[in-house]
Image (tube, rainbow, N blue to C red; front, side, top):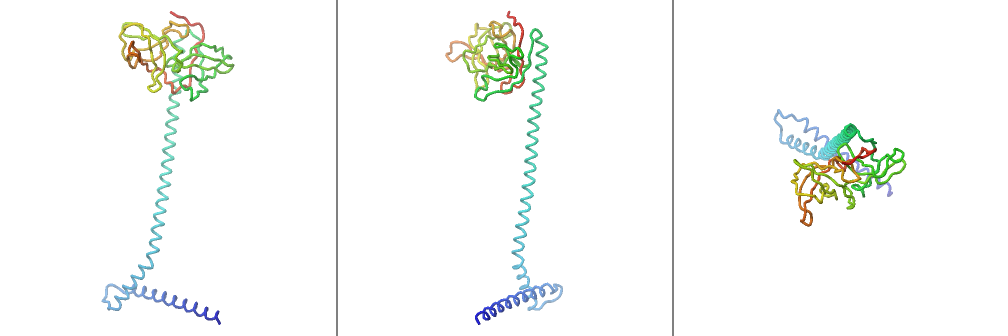
Length: 287
């Protein structure tokens, strides 16, 4: 009995739902079938308005969902286009950086060739930098030439632009080079400053890491020194031959104690970028 009652109730609900849908459909059909170009009765106008309202109510959720789907598709398309542009930009930037690296390498190799022509009195051994520790970036580096190539401690190392340091340790296949930018205060190098009318001398001693400048102290006289004057090795010591370019004067100032002049020198070589270097071998003559 209970099952029959429930079944009748369900059948009644379905019947009501079907009737309502049929009524909505008929009203909608009537509202669409009524032409606007003839006179309409009050009932027809009412039925048409009711039909249109019902259509609007029924279609609103579908329009809402459709708009959301369109918005999602647009956002998805825009995101794909953005990703494609971003990847293209990244690839372009990477190619530009690689191109800069290649150009710099070619320039370095050309300078090494010019160096070989200008220093024909020496046997030159070209080498590649194979290791450079971040903790001692401006102190030392390792090159791929060693005792096997007759490289010895004390030999001068330079690039096509200028002096970078000297060999302090050799292994069979590699050597360690101490740079002139080292923070070792005992690493002093005698240099000459070429002025308009004279050559004056001082000691290269220290490196200003913040300003990327070498420091020259103990200027021996009152010779006028200007920005842009060339600084070279003096040949007054037994460590470096005469005339190797170190850099150019960037500023003349008093030292920390205000008792003498100090010169700031912009290095001829970019110490942030060292790939290829040359070792000077053979007899070094001093004047």
